Image (cartoon, rainbow, N blue to C red; front, side):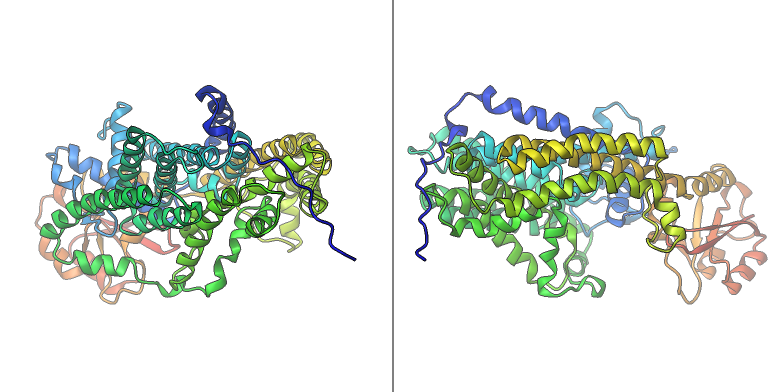
Length: 595
């Protein structure tokens, strides 16, 4: 039987370049406001257990204290160039994140002498939320530049409700900052290129766009290092190749971005190299694959899990550029495809792989989903709906309805399910039955219309209802995790007990002769809540630094290992006695001695 040709459709207009600013801006404002509950829900209650967030917050706080000066110590502005972590130079990462967190604290009128650790943690996380909003807005802008307002709305709504993006935007780490900078740099570059306009952009627009992209990329390099330059230039090169025109403008723009970014990074690098001769070796270790991070080449197939429930549309988006969709411009579909494919291939080559590494390609994934939905909506409005659309739309609608019942039930029944051995601990707060019922009814009120609109090809309403459904789920999940983990975190109490015992005296760590336990530097949450560095000594060096005849006020409180017999004997000889023990963040027992 001969294959029936697909009916010809009128090309999609590129409305994003043809309508007024307010016409294109107000949907973005609604999406940003609607994103806030999931991003902000109980953001200050979660404990600090994620290593990169711990180091980000800890080095920002410690550097802020050193620059301004606390507890009678004079300020030291050189720490701005070389941030510190537990009294040692933090040279594995450039200082931009530290500067941004410090700047946010200063601009909001906080004093390092009186600002609590919990307050500073909240400030750093709110900064991360701002970068998440920047990434959402940039994704929307790219949708406008390569498509129209509906494409932009679909892309931003999908991107803002992916759990991996919500989690990254709630975490004060380098990855969220990099995501914001890189996505904005790509948006600014595309704005400068005006890829699908008949006439090239004016020179002023080109200069302004590439200048903004260069500054954002420089900030990204000063946040994450040289990798950031690849994360911006590789997608830009791939997108310029498939757009097929304005190559000279794109090439000059990429040269400008590279020149400004490399100059900014080189300035910091050579300044630090004068202070830390081992900088080169330290950075080499930073970019070497750790054994526990080594994964197979196909590891990043898990991106399909990271973008649930939008995964079916992502699969379709990877095929969509190579399918006849009725005469529409294939380049619109190839732009996010080139971005996604370039970064996916790049990140798949190294042995070291983690989910957070591929966050910069998630905006491209959202745009791939959006191009499929936009074309299907166009076909449906023309009275010629895609006959294969049900393969995507009906399962997604069904998942929404089932999830509306299953998610509240899981939160309400998790103690019973754990008692039965059917699930492990979810680290989520348990909901009471009445709250679970109300949540389930609310989710059903969104899931049922979403399923109906998707099934009947009214995709704009269907996607928006599904995005609202997902936004509520991510907000509740973030709240449940924050409440549960915050309640279980003993770090604040341990830090308070240590500070009360110290009464203004220093705290030190005396390590065992054979170090089999994690060092005190690994106790990031404890150091954050203590708001001070804890220097490390061996028993002999400690005895020389703090002899038995030293004044009581200058004799420090000692943290050590409870099973370290030789150290305990040495402390006994120096007039120290056991005070209490506690369990460290790495589940390592710690013993505290006081004179």
